[in-house]
Image (cartoon, rainbow over all chains, first blue to last red; front, side, top):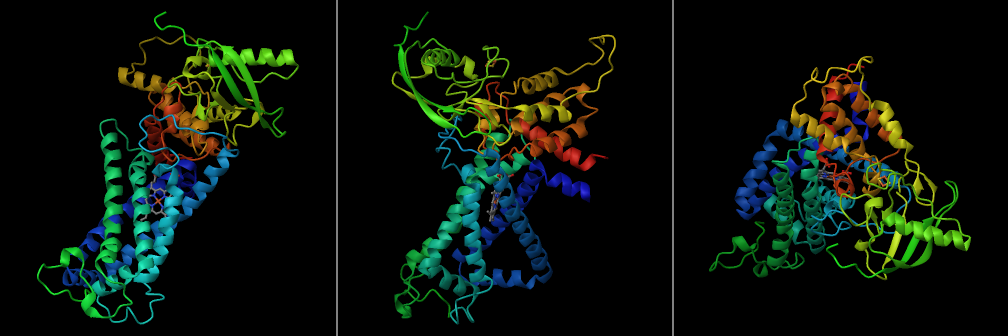
Length: 254
Length: 257
Ligand code: HEM
Ligand code: FES
């Protein structure tokens, strides 16, 4: 297997791994977003989905191993690649300007110039996200005995968390808006007939990811009173849940 | 003459001056008057150098040879753009009509760890030569000139190969890339050979050896920003990088040594 390790540790080989792990993570994002959108259907549907998922022990174990390995590889190589890319320039320019005239935004703020920074923001967000939902770290007794829907509600209604989750989602959208199309090119999948469509889809995917994931903290924050207020009567439900003449009750099925 | 001559230009130049590789450099400011908009960029620098020589200052060193846009010797960063603001144009073919009276023009050498500055605006591009030496050749039978029709090559392969062969090795791709990657250059060489039957025997060895050399020289990896394509005076497309990636994938899986 020495040949494989050698070939994959070159500049092109590292990008293969970056692209493959990136695409796998994009697939995960699609599934994760689809699952999360069930939050809008209601506590029961979301709860059923969560329980059904957690009953698939073998599938869950396999997908977690794959997911964590993909993340670790992607992040490890992100640091390696970025470090060698920065040293390759050596002395920076006094002035630098793009020559691409199809640029929509200036090259310094373009998603492709932000891959490491947007990825790093996603990494910080991921750490918070995992400590919240997986390890329930730092929440004391608040999350104990909650349904999956209730747990999501408590976390998303925390103002600090809402901001972190919204920012993380936007950074992720920016990251994949370049990343998806870039992964195709890195793997050599390029054809004048389809390149336009791939680029366009990548940007659309970025928007879907950003708006889709950011919608949860934004909508929950807008429709609910701060969690410190424990009087149930003042809490509103998420917009899609509110029935015109139903009394406003606590969104958490406690 | 269809356009009326533009006003003659007064320019403010800010140029990188460095006497040797191992000495620190600095930007120095120069004033130029009465520059014709019909001059090329290098002719403008010639005027500056004449002025500097008369003042007893060392002239600005820059690379040039053909001054026709075909040799790839010239090249410098002009206001942050490789070969200046015009597209598909080398510095020697860039005309002063692209600038306005009173402009400040910042002129820097290509910046890359693999391209050490020799003097002022001249960088050492031997790294490109070593990438070519690593695999940019074909094995042929020497002797009599071969019969022209012995090797039939489909027209689209010829065209594809020639599109890649248009690369003049100027280094603008490296200069424009945020990672100082030479992927477009290396891809042009790989793509040039692989689309011709003569390039087939070394196909696997070539791409692995050239990428290995590329990395050893200290060039960065490709983030697919396409800045190289936009800066390339020969309009070499990033689709050649995609072909390089396919070649590398195939070579990685099938190489026997
Ligand atoms: C769910 C999370 C993530 C997804 C879906 C994702 C997806 C992708 C994709 C598809 C690419 C393009 C690969 C290519 O150009 O061939 C990419 C590149 C990149 N990712 Fe991520 N990524 C994620 C998280 C991260 C994290 C946490 C980091 C950490 C810093 C990161 C850093 C990078 C960097 C630096 C690149 C660009 C490498 C380069 O071309 O120079 N990513 N990502
Ligand atoms: S001097 Fe030959 S291309 Fe400019």
